[in-house]
Length: 177
Image 1 (cartoon, one colour):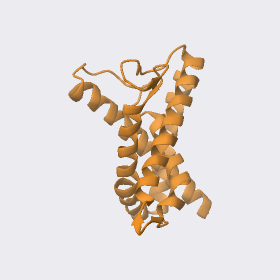
Image 2: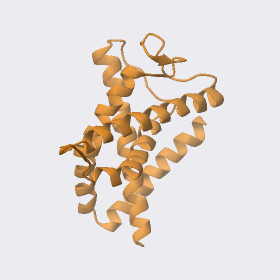
Image 3: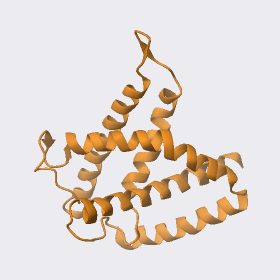
Image 4: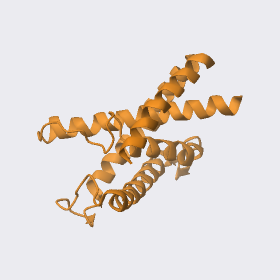
């Protein structure tokens, strides 16, 4: 049953970061760019699954590196390597997502043509740096807090919450995809 607890925990992390990503996108749209509110995703609910997927990829791919201390001339370069890893992985995920969305819907939900150092309007250096900074915050601050909160949940509460969220998101995916 330990595998089930882990699966439920990672699903809850996925949901949290999907919702966090939606809030981040809406914040940029409403507060930073002042474009007004719109649902930033292709689903009905307040979540962007690409952020949840990205978070899980970062957890699985970079956790081993995060736990190491790599030095160069007595300077710890692990945080720098982590930042580069976050940037590369999130940029690759964003690029792949743009192609998947274009294949499924005929377009993707962002356009980086106005940025310098961009590729086909799908990815750009500026957002990649933002994702790198956000990913560091996520790995070093948010994820440890979520893990502590998750540890406080009873197995029954974790299972119930996971099932409810899976049902809601599953229906949303089924209707919109």
